[in-house]
Structures are given as C-alpha cells and as structure tokens.
Image (cartoon, rainbow, N blue to C red; front, side, top):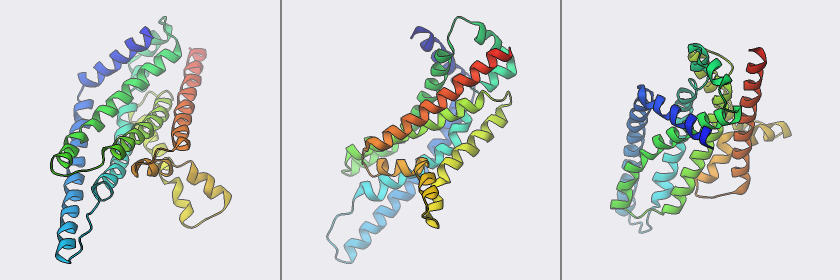
Length: 255
C-alpha cells in the first residue's frame, strides 16, 4: 500500500508541476459553464412560457438541467481522458525512466494502481469544478440531490473504465500523441457502439450496444443505480488494468 501511495503522489505532483492539470481544469470549467448557462436559460424560458400559457405544473430541474448536463459532461470526458492518460507510461518510455521504474522494488500492480488512481483523482477533481455551477441551483432552486450523486458516481465509474483503457494503451508506445490519439479512438468506439441499434436489431447489434459506455451511463444520468451497470464498469476497469499488467510483463521480458 505504501508503494501505491508513493507512485500516486509522484503522478499527482507531475500533473500539477506541468500545465496539464491547469489546462484541463480551465477548459472543462469554460465548456461546462457554457453548457450550464444554456441549460438553465432553456429551463427558465420554458418555465415562463408554461406560466404564460396557464400551465400550473412545476418543471423538474433535475430532468431539464441536471440530466442534460451529466450527459454533456460524459461527452467532454472523451476529450479529457486521452490527455490525462497519454503520458502515464509513454512519457516514462520516452525519457528512459521506465527502466529505472521496472527495476525498482515495486511490483507491477502497485505501479499500475498508483498511476491509474492518480489519473482517476485528477479526473474527479476536474468533475468537482462543475459543483460550483450546480451550487447555484441549490441556492435559487430545489433540485433533488440524490440523483445528482448517482449521476456523478456514474461519471466516475465511466471515467475509471476509460482511464484504465487509456493506461493500457499508454504502455504500448513511447509517443504521447499516438497514445492520446489511440485512446481517443478507443473511447469513441465504446461511445458509439450503441448506434447500431438505430438500424439493426440482431443479436450482434444488441451485444455491441451492451458494450457501449453510453448504454450503462444513461440510468445513472436518470438517478437510477443499477448493479448491472456498476458491474459492467468495474469489469472494464479490471480488464483494462489486467491488460496493462500483461503489457508491463511483456516489457520486462523484452528488457
């Protein structure tokens, strides 16, 4: 556990010692701020229109604002996650420190978990920035906080599985640009797998739809916590880290 903590601290410090963390946080804050403004503006406009037409039923803030925002955040993650993971092992290989890391008295699993947890904490910190915007909803409105927590749990689980895949891809090359591009392509494919169900209902199409990260995030965005969706994300995380361990083992054999 101490070795994992050491690797974790090293990675976190390296993120904030460079412009990476600050750039990602700034970009996320600007994009999410715009999405938040648009979502709340639409909600307020529709509310006034409803009152002017004599409709007395209240509009659901969670349905009109929170849910679309959570779906938009998951899309933003497609672009942020490759930039978080592309340097994890590719930079070590490029700078030549991977040999020092491999020969240190630290197990491969400890190295992998330390780096992956650092990436996950950074991603969680980026997501936390959105809480500043959501605080205004609680200040001036009355949203239900439980679906929001479930939605953010879904974002963390979705981010965790994509980060695990990005961690694996980072072990395959010494070029950060290639690692980032390949990770983005893999994440995008997992995102659009469910599109096939729009025109196909065969078994293979349903299987591809099930493998889509979007299919399993939609219940979270609605505030529904389903064990099958949690198990799916945890399984992908395990698979990604397992493949990373096998790749690290191959690096040792080649060395």
